[in-house]
Image (cartoon, rainbow, N blue to C red; front, side, top):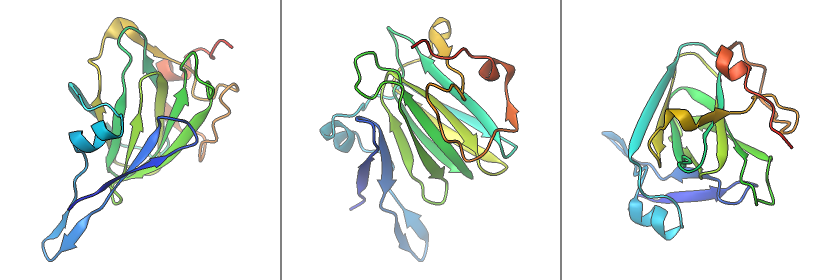
Length: 179
């Protein structure tokens, strides 16, 4: 039976999701999502929207994005081609870990994922060329609720593997968080 493992990060509710790939002469099989398993762990099981991004260049940074109330977006993020350093920053108002971050390397070869609950800002840095990222979204996108915070805001002190080479003007100019 295929197994999913929820590996906790230093921030409550934020998990790396590891899979148990079964190999044979044909290749491999792995379950990457199971509603009953996610539900029994208290995680989101409804994913009404899925997105993908393709990034041609190493050093591309996307983020830090979030969607405001009343439609915050939990996410299940997977790198389906290449490798990324994926980051989530806790923006939950009553959280004891507010403004702390956790990062996970997502790797197409490992087929791991990052479970990000509602109330987190999310971003990633591509670690190689030709990277594709697949997102399962727990809420539909609402343009007027789209927000962001600056990727290198000193309040977060994120330790990125290296400085980005490519970043959109929008992402580069997001404001610092208000403490």
